[in-house]
Amino acid sequence: MSIFRGAFVAVVTPFIDGKLDEQGLVELIEFHIANGTHGIVPCGTTGESATMSHEEHHRVVELTVKTVNGRVPVVAGSGSNSTSEAIDLTRHAKQAGADGVLMVSPYYNKPSQEGLYHHYKAVAEAVDIPIILYNVPSRTSSNVLPQTVARLAQIDTIAGIKDATGDLNQVSEVIRLCPKDFAVLSGDDFTSMATVLLGGTGVISVTSNVAPKDMAQMMDAALAGDLSKAKQLHYKLFPLMNAMFYDTNPVPAKKSLELMGKIKSGTPRLPLYNMDEATLARLKAALAAYGLI
Image 1 (cartoon, rainbow, N blue to C red):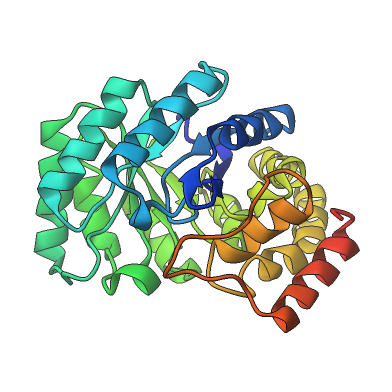
Image 2 (spheres, rainbow, N blue to C red; image 1 turned 90 degrees about the vertical axis):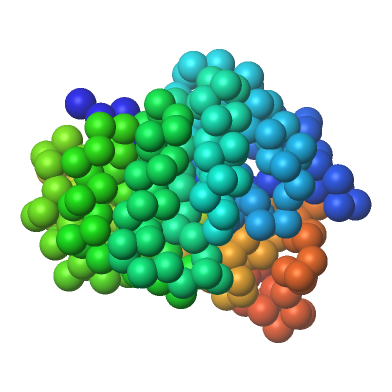
């Protein structure tokens, strides 16, 4: 059975005055493990990997692996719009002891389907570690089509995909075309229950940052076929899922964790910026309604 099952948190990276808050990250990881999160994903979009130096990226992955200490899988973000850079980051993740990597499709370059295939294939051939493809067209300006995913799924170390298209038609086609042991993880919290019911294996979640226990229990229920419990948790979480996108991710998640007292500062790195007062008031209301503050 795949280790890529359940609710994996795309964990935020806490900064204080723009510098990595190592103790804050350690405490966040412990919070997640204590609340039943099934896996930790450092250095993803939610972790602000786009504004981290390579040294910081390496440190966050190493610290995460060390802190988790084998208790749950660690899937390190290692994507880049440069194939050689993605290989370097993936090589480091393997050396650090990560259980797998999450590899976003090249952004900005806008490669063809053939370019996407050869990008992922090159990394898979260079580093022997399970790779989760990450298809997020809203961030990359490209869509890894189901037929391309199916080709990539034939490569031994390409173990699954995080699908953040928000399109259950595409999710269904990926599941239909790919091998049974290929992990299909939702990349949008609001499609996570539905993705599992269609045959997916879980979610890489933003909302898990603030409600790890409920997200993990929803995935457990969906994977076990307990539809009534999964549905109840989905609708409980649904307003919170929307609140995590009142501003660009991870701005609301980081501010929420600060308001909850889980990190010292929720300030993101430029060019992301703190939300305005009206949006902050909406976020506080959503967190209060959920009982988080």
